[in-house]
Length: 238
Length: 111
Image (cartoon, rainbow over all chains, first blue to last red; front, side, top):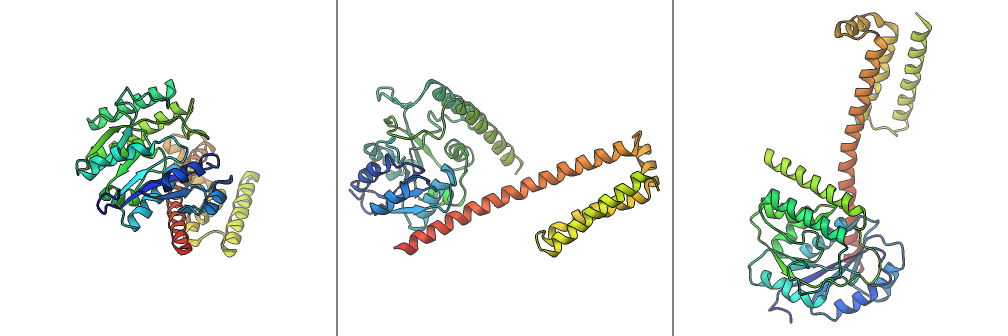
């Protein structure tokens, strides 16, 4: 399924994912989509595994964090003229079978950005979140609604698909910290782009730890809240 | 001149010397050096002629010159820290961009 010439790229950031990277490579290379793995300065065996398995990848010179890694993927997508780029986790959290649903609104020109959300369809039993994390997400969802007037149920989801215009935008400018909620908010409030949420099922991660967990969730939520406040302030002055 | 004045002038002179050496070794860029050069020179002038500044401090409502100088220097340090923070943020962004572009280029070359 090449979607009648539509070029589709999976952007897979990987930081110390030696336990799960190989199965991710297998999954994505047997899929109909192109992929690029961004090795974000891993200090474990991840780079060796990538070289040995001949996976299409970029090695960053040093660790940039999730935002910088994903942005590198968007730059790659922009340079190589991809029509759609999908952020896909290296740790098995995202289910490749849902990509078809995720890109459908973009292919039908009904959205510029789609977010894979595990809070829309309650029947897809999601095991992803701890209570505190869910609270944090609801809090951010409320904040985004308050300031932009629009509701996103899962603003922190790292499972997103972007069309060509968004790829170009993200390649030029992308938040290095907490990129998902912040870029979602920016797009919602200040642009003509349409965002759609698509119900997906997320798996429990196979290995490794989420970049955001436990009490750090609170810290992260406050940080994102402040960033949104500052963004508001910045744009209003213009 | 009191002892205190001599000490202050001497300390400022050492600072000035240190800055000049750094400039000579090129470890401090000339562009950033103006403020750092002015600082010890102003200190030396104050150490030698404290009267006008003392009068000014009194006029502003400070009881002693020392209080005034502390306040000014702390304000100055905060300002310098803030500007350093700004240039640090800018450089961080630039380094991130360099890292990304270089990594992309390396990947392209490997093919």
